[in-house]
Every structure is written in structure tokens, then in C-alpha cells.
Length: 124
Image (cartoon, rainbow, N blue to C red; front, side, top):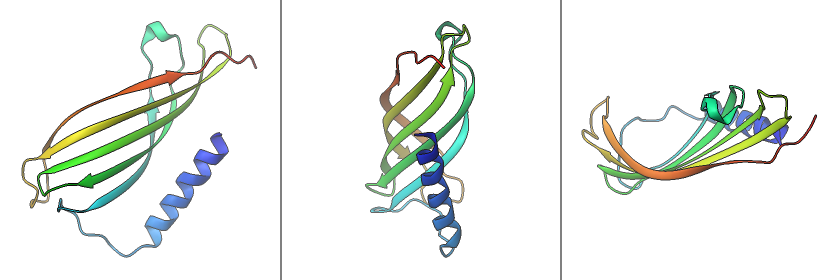
């Protein structure tokens, strides 16, 4: 699964790098795809290690001011207590309100919900 995620993210980055420059700004009917890599730290009670997170955001601007965004994350982590590896998947759906959609810097307010699923322990 990790190789698939990395290969998919590499393909997305390569296609974006090869595309012509894109214009920034929020506009009605615009669709966005944003792959990303970062870090994910779990709550101490979850007893899981901090590891890289791989994700994808898909967005659609309904109007210049209102948009919707779906987010998917994948983390391959391990127990800090020696119970083996775990895979965590999180997802959310947000409704966005853009305050100044025609400016270079667009402040926004997001409201949404989602969840995180952590698989059962697999011993290594």
C-alpha cells in the first residue's frame, strides 16, 4: 500500500510540474487537486509513533466565495508499546467560505467533519 501511495503522489507531482503555470484565485466552477506530504503526531493516549502522512485534497468552488473540499490522509505507523505496526486513514469534508476571493491572499473559514480509522495490530 505504501508503494502505491508514493507512486500515485509522484505521478501527481510530475504531472503538475509538467503543466503550464496556473492562475491563483477562487472562481466559481473551479476544481482543484492538491497532493501533499507532511507529518502526523497522534495523541499520547493512542500510543502510536509520529510518522509521515500522505494525503490528497479535492476541492470545488461552488461560487467565488463558497467551496467544498474533501481530504484523505494515510499514515503507516507503529505502536510505541511494541504491539506492531498500524495503518491509519483519515478523511473529512469541509465547507469553505472565502472572504476576499479576488485577492492574492484569501482568508477563509472552514466548517466540516470527518473521522480517523486505525486498523488492528499486525505484528512484525
